[in-house]
Image (cartoon, rainbow, N blue to C red; front, side, top):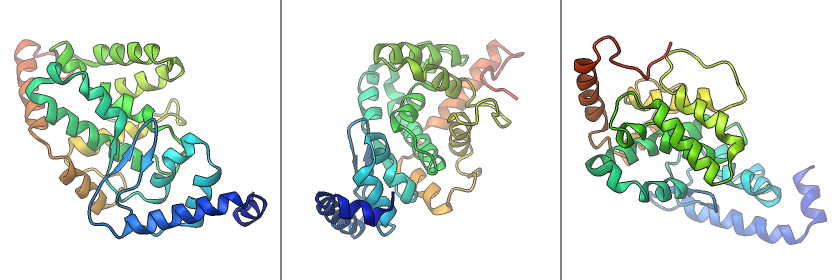
Length: 254
């Protein structure tokens, strides 16, 4: 359907288009800020690109999931946050202890990178947020560096509780393959490969970028400081090597 014809047939939508255009232009002029994305809404607070007809049209006629993704599809240079990640982290602050900020910032960096890599797809951001939150969580819940089975189980239990069982296979694979050294090819329609790349961008401190814009990667790294996350991983790796010298990095795959 052509955008102009749609607006002619649905005059009430013109008002929404005007409101969205003014809102985007207004926020475009603001300094700093983070886009917030979650299961309920996406609120623009810093948009560097000019609003496009495609964006406005997508917002008007798109379903909830499309609206969640619209900002990403047209603006991949803004740092974003996640309401769902905030909700999930609130329940694990005691478990994470002094590593709370380190792991939270790691998750937010990976979330940003994965959303940007997925900019050409229509995806549900909650799926990325859930995979991000649980992907390394087993390190703390099981106090083990062989944490992937525990992380996948935590995600599975959460999805069952929330009635999202249809996401189970994809999210568990995202978690299980995120340290894979080579490309994941089995289900190209899944987010597994993009998630793997997003985690590697963060693990290399931005040395690997997979065609993401340099400024965007730098902005994400600055918005969510390392806070000792990689130092923690090195400490865990050393401890693992001492106790399991033949299997120092059990999460790695070819």
